[in-house]
Amino acid sequence: VQLQASGGGLVQAGGSLRLSCAASARTVSNYGMGWFRQAPGKEREFVAHMSRSGDGIYYRDSVKGRFTISRDNAKNTVYLQMNSLTPEDTAVYYCAARTRYSTNYGDLREYNYWGQGTLVTVSS
Figure 1 (cartoon, one colour):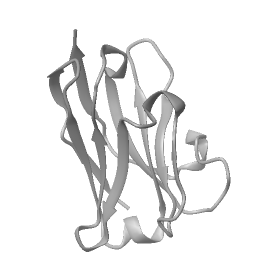
Figure 2: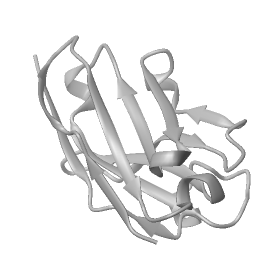
Figure 3: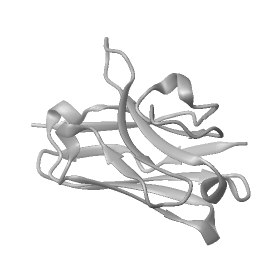
Figure 4: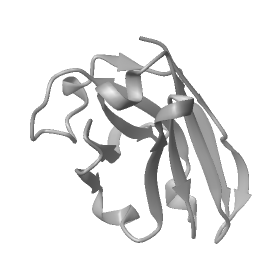
């Protein structure tokens, strides 16, 4: 399984970005997909998750109402639409895939495959 994240960049506070995670064939429809982020000097943290079925969608509290995870099975791509960005959202964003179902969607140890990360910088 290969994951390729893209779409990061520099944006002003209040702006929007859409991240993409291109996956190898049939990954996004067969695996649970997650987005994580890691700010400088901090641990990697959970951002969003979409279950394999697509019915289970979860977000960390601080991004609820601002971020939206979605996927396009035909394109084998998962997206993270980020609106109303704040400087606190500045981080390297990673997409990840997990093969085994569990309720611990926020635990990065549950994910088997990781993309290389894309940097999001939000200026004040």
